[in-house]
Length: 368
Image (cartoon, rainbow, N blue to C red):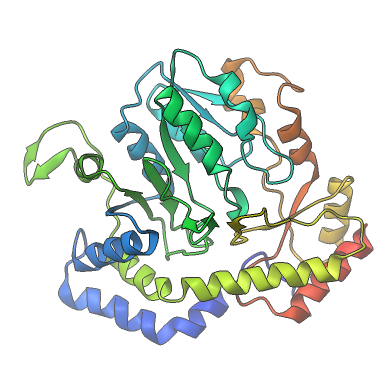
């Protein structure tokens, strides 16, 4: 029996790194130093240097990275934070945790990211920050967002959960705003073997606040300056991530190569394939096509059993039951709503073979 091409194959990557990861994990076990130790410190230094920033603070998850960054940025109850409706709910949840209000602005249908040209109209006296998401690994239009934030005195917190290593005009995503927030969920471009996250910043005072917030509001052991959180990346995860970090550029290059291969195999099929925007480096956390009769195509793909596929995301956040109290209705953000009806993500990971890509593309063309 031939198994369908999976969305992501973590097993093949593990087999390639098995000896290195085993040594790294056993090294942590030998030290018996499991929380806030040398592996985490070294990972923070590596990732700060990679992004060209001064500080990196590891935390327990990508959601925590956003939550603690917003808190350190001074976002409070009743503040408004502008973001995209077309993303995983964690982006908006982190805003809601603080009692702040997510203000959803429609997306650019070409990039799936927040439409920078529509942000200014959403700014009010209560607006305190903008949270752009570099969705699927495609950088958002940072130049325009940063200029607007400077003019209006707003914080910028980048959601880089899907964009580790992506670039906008020669700089890595996460290095533009007050904070860049990353997820190390196992399926991410740089993924651990459990939850994990990181926040990067060039601001020393903000970095010190994050260090306190992640560790029960404490800078000196058993002395607590504020009510903080327990959000620390453990040493085993840090050790695994340090191994995989050495290969991240190669992994991203392979994803980009795979995307070009998909584009070639799907050419002329009638689907809209993702395009890399000028001046950016897309790292294809997801390879997402647009299909007019998406639900029917996905149903046929599922029935064909030769490839996996996923919908990221079927319901934009402004129409989720969790945000019903915002009072937004169908038709209020048409570009995001249309994308939710048409997007379909195909298998994407560095070890994907051209044969597998051809199998997926042929299945898509049959399903059409």
